[in-house]
Image (cartoon, rainbow, N blue to C red):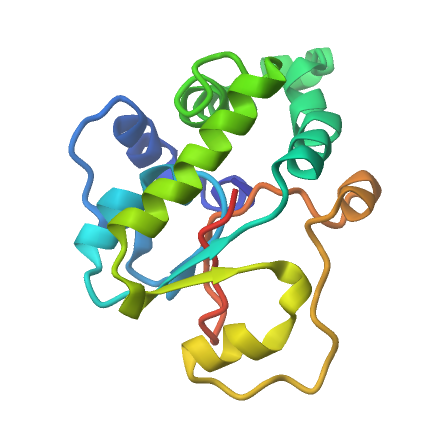
Length: 195
């Protein structure tokens, strides 16, 4: 969602997608080379069909630490009452509503606080991606693997820098990683299908 904050003109497209209405994916993703995290990951099937030659990267991790991390970071932002000024900001309200409709209601059926339900949805998502995306265009990736498998899959050289760790709980708390991704305008295809 972080990119949605920067490109709020896309909010209406994502709202239509969340309602199950037709969306011109090229209109949303035209200048982008990849997508990472929400809201794109909610529409992985539609995007995989629309971009049939695109590679798909499914980042995986143990469901228990995943749940604890999301519950104690991103989800707490959902539960918190925003400051009055933020409540009056129509754009922030639309983004919060979009996040709720795409993620918390759309994926987790309003039951993210139910740990077993959330972990089941997480596992079912991973299973569905592995089942429905052909092996030739899918990388199942754990962040702990670092650059190697990712760069091999994307056929790009391994960067001469440490693998970034911007989406962990410590970074989120410090404000440097929001866990709210979106289309990635980067010059290298380093996008992931992440949850």
